[in-house]
Length: 636
Image 1 (cartoon, helix red, strand yellow):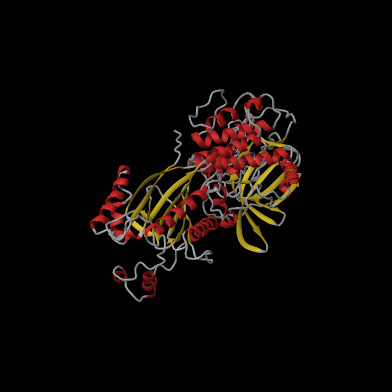
Image 2: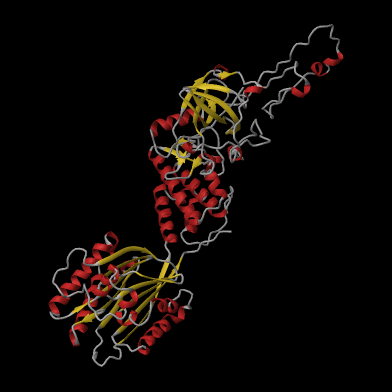
């Protein structure tokens, strides 16, 4: 009775059937339809489900009433109950009125015809494909459909125009008299048209319930995701979302025991278009259930419970990782990845009591995702400092240091500091040493605070160092450059004319600003970059620590959340280095392609260049190279 181009009226929608897309549980049929309304000229693509008014669709309506407007469930567009579908079916359009639609990207008949269902009444020889409007990409609901297909014959049509029954599995039994009717005399009378009444399928008797939803975006469905082989991290994230959905239903005393990947959209959040796989918990069913993701005990003891849902999520995770779902066997393909191995083994255990609760499973899925998603970051460090060759500089007024904090197994946090003291003789040496010691000591016990406000925390370290220097060395001062490293994130704080560089991909970038007179003159256009190198006041600073007891707002330069890449080299150096070794030379010395064993060699080469060119000032160079190694998890 419902076939392609059939027209129906449900609520405010005029519906044209585009495609019969299958049958599920031998009870519900699904149709792809075009939706039209009187107040809109735009066509929408929807899904019509037809089934018994006392079957699974009615059960879904009960659950929908409990859930209300739940974000993870696509809403119904319309619904109706009829005793005879012919009441709402309009005549099929003529040949001139045939609806022509754009092919869709993909039909999802295969998943609707599960292994455990009997043969569907309609086997499509060709798949029609319709483009799904973008307006339906996020709000779609798919619901199961059961159709009553009318098998009509028309003896008045030529044999090559006889209508083809849309019910390939329907068997017509003709008696011998009918088969041999051509041998009987006609006597000038028409033969009466043979009529063979349709035999209803189980569940088709009585009133029929029709549910209408939007159509799932084929590019966003779970089935499309499975075809594209998601990564282990994507698999864990997806399983966690579905586990959260199942847990919410469990709180409402309902249990999801199977999945149809064609009827779930992957997004933020996921969206489920069919709830006929959900059953009231602890309510025995009249017959066994089997499906791609069904727990094995449901085949012979069909009483859905919480740990039936645990098995379903475990089976989905297995499918996403291995590329195919588990079979109904006691032995599954082993997993050699810690945490994932335990998750799969216990979620898929044939012994129900060995499985996790949904709360436990959700927690372990999150833990596994966080563990496998954390990259391993290590740092290679090299440094060198020299007093230089000037007879006026008998003390090295540069100081530097580096420390890390990884207490209680938390993420490693690295803090590096370099300071260039001023004041002559011991004054500058003391000032720089106190500044470096102050900030490195400040890292202890403060790891948690760095995440909340890196900028504020770094500024507080510099302000504390300034207070220490101004009190202990009244006539001294110092520059201070800090680098904070947290996994793949870097932040800096800076005062003075020491520099912080980042070397990446054969390029060098200065991250810090020069707080000096010549830098101001260059920025204002009064002198050129070349002139600044020979300017007599190039050592005059506009900002330093120790010159005043309190620093004004904005005095400290900060840059936060710099994303690091594998092989990045970070350089901290005093002006005694960058004044004699150009940026281009530093880049060539510390290119990422250099072997790991030569980082210290590169530092030594830079200091050697300084000495070769006169080393009129103290020179200090601290280099850190980043090694980022992601956790690699492979499945055949």
